Length: 463
Image 1 (cartoon, rainbow, N blue to C red):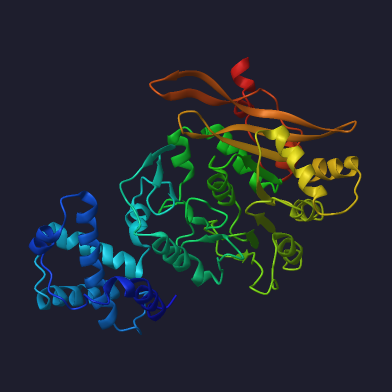
Image 2 (spheres, rainbow, N blue to C red):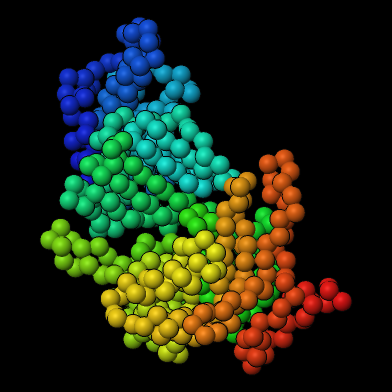
């Protein structure tokens, strides 16, 4: 969104509040004297001061500034801010002055009250339940924060600021939207009349520095032995599904696994909102598109999977399958595009197979159940299941081979299983351990020139 559009939005939202007060002299001492002896009155006085200064800035800033040059824009805003405080004889303490400046900058070029939370590296999720109730997730635990929007309109302005650059919309006819922030963080917004508490925003934040394999090992999310095994599976072009519940770390694990893909291969990624952070050079990123206001122009994940087959991919990575796209993904895996990966919501490896079966039926074709299960058993080699445990930690709890068919049933073999040994001081104690079973696809690994020691599967340890 251009700075001109942002400034126009700010003017529209603040016109009614500041028609009589723009340019008036207003000191912090006057604000304290004018404020009624209740916290709400003090807050209203502060918001009035903030609105007055913000409107002056909006009126005097150059709308042609390139907001992508954040440092330069911030410097220009600060110069004008200092000038306005002097001209209007606004006297503030150093702390008040800094706080007011940061809030105004966030309103003009950032995401308003959410900006400090988005800059906080300890925050992994932000949840806005209407203008006055904001929660964050830190280390898997939810806490309420003492931050609030001014009104429903204020929340709507921030939502528009997020979705507008992506060409998406949210209004009464389309009251939900999936989007992303410039850094790739995932955003979902729901507004009235669907939401009864006011506009809501849910932001899944990603670390400024993507997690590495060593980070996951240090966190206890996975073991070095299982990582070595997964790396071999990716290099040998096995098809992998990462499953788990919401917030279990599926996308993080998919990022880690995709990092093992050799740099000389062509990768096509398909997502609803682009959030994968691949390090390779030869990556084509595709993003689905919702219908426009006339109900036309929709491009679904299913459309993109079909199109990707014509793009000469070595690997196809689908951020998440949730509908009939599952059938096209299985077809891709079964037609020479080995080494493909995707994620799916489920409660466990067995449920992952059942969900993919159900999603395949959603494609609308009258296929026999056995034919679908044969496709699944033939296409998918491995399921990596992640979970968020009671203490809020995220761990890989199953690495399971899809071994084939026995009658009408898809057979699964657990190769690694998380074994919980205790719960101390609010922490789950346990480790992902090998089951002692070797996968049937060992010949594929060896054909790729990869030879894993039997100790990885716990065979040497049992002797």
